Length: 267
Image (cartoon, rainbow, N blue to C red):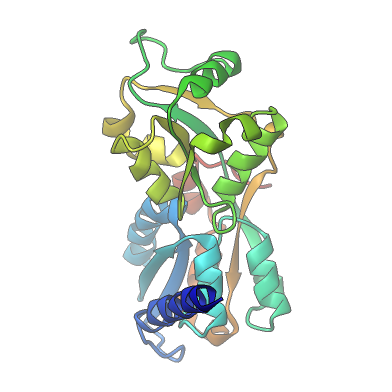
């Protein structure tokens, strides 16, 4: 019991320091907006930020993390103006919590999941695996990395996939978890996991890491679609930079950047 209370206290302290180490900027500041960004989208938003800031009189400050952790930080008072989640549920919950503007929520991108199997390729012309071959290699892998399904939507999709294929219980003793999809990528690239599930965008953003490796682009029907939603927080209701960036995310220029990064677009 004492150990449980101690663990809870440490978790609360960790969340406190995460929240209050974020930039402290007034929502009345008309020259900048703070964007909380799901880890899988960090590389892409940096490209969007560069394009946006060339045509706008204002700057974006990016705060990355797992969707679940960012959601918790916002609820604890973190000064975030826009939340770019990797799911739909947390933005909707922020609206239910009275912290966000409900009619501002929309799907800005749809993510794709891949299985990454480093060092497996013997055919330099064909790195893509059939589902059958990918599953056979996963079964032979000593450790398999997934993002934490309680915090990261890509982790939840990975678990759903394995359950759909009746593989989860078989592979469960060999599963290791990253807090977010970025940590999951690091587990595989460092060799601490022999295989795992990452976002397609990560593979495209880091070709030097995945070159010559096998991969399987997972059929979207095997898991709940990874619809990534944006929402404007109430603190930024009159912030011109935040409002402009929400409009920009729907623009043809932004959608093209996201497509090139490996995301699908909602209609």
